[in-house]
Image (cartoon, rainbow, N blue to C red; front, side, top):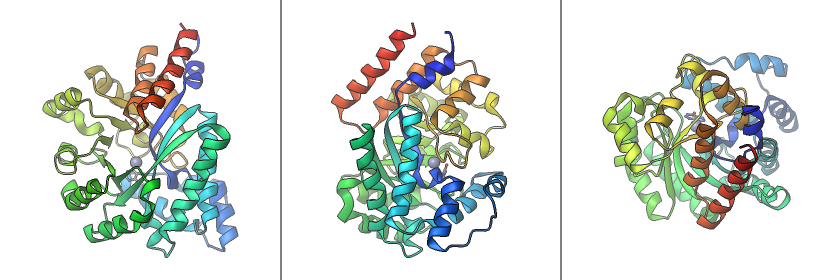
Length: 338
Ligand code: HPA
Ligand code: ZN
């Protein structure tokens, strides 16, 4: 392989774990703060970046929710989403499934409609102008109550056609899947697909319960699975996708450094692993940068990279025909690099 990074850049990719609020770059945060007359506790972009010095998931979430307060109008949500789409274009992402956190906004008096239409209109333009396809997944904040999650599910129903599924994010420890068993069951009855963050900081019981109680189709993160042989065996047999986010895991100290990251072990075991950027504005880089950091530190082969990329398309919620078209486009690039 001449240059593995060139190969990574050229490969068509899909993203399955991306919080749209986590794509809000400091530059846009300043612009929106000014536009909306909102005070933020930083004077310069450099100061913002210095504050992104996380010690764990909660230390990140505190800053991430504070940052989201600059988002007020539909145009704000459109601008943030469009900026992310331009990064997709740069990184050769053909399809993206993005999370949004309605409660982060409805709690502040922003309507569900403002949020969903701002995001959706940018994604519609992404398809029209750039040929990038997408799906939207709505996440419940797990530090809030079950009752609040039910309210949010109810609020989402008029916009069901624009939302493919529901997820679960925010503070994992102390907020186990069991707390959301009923609301996930109801979401399923409404036809939503189900995913959940599990095994990011939480132990294997969070992954097992997300599978057994919430009946999810994909596990977001899931890297703690390595601590149970039985669970690893199950994930392999059932080929349940794991949406792994390397930069996020390093920035939130889930692993000490990239060399310690277990993605290669998970992959070699035969798990259905994918690479994703999670909150790229906060975790120092988008999709390609996640791959670059991996290949700089871990002996991933060209075949490993192709497998990771194909896993993402195969694990996406895209209709089968389009999935096959995308995979064919991956194969075309692979052949050229033989
Ligand atoms: N984990 C949990 N909640 C989140 C994350 C994450 O990585 N990013 C945004 N909300
Ligand atoms: Zn996440």
